[in-house]
Length: 66
Image 1 (tube, rainbow, N blue to C red):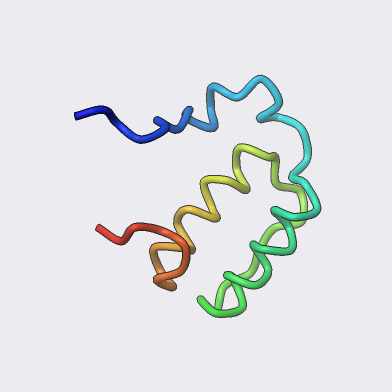
Image 2: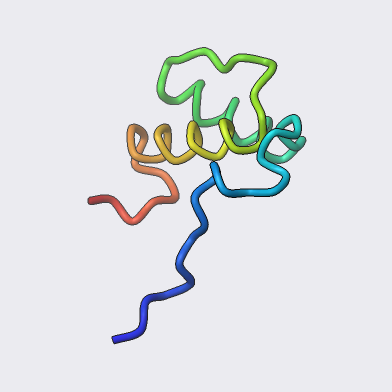
């Protein structure tokens, strides 16, 4: 069985050290509000992606839920 679109680890992104994007920041603040946590303002794209994954699991949003 073929794996559906394997995701590249954010640590391997060539742009991972750039500042997070506007959409990442917006979505993070939405998730953080639901989870009751604060989001640092100086996250990189890679850090923001990892935090999004974590908060999706905490809030039950967006992820497949394991």
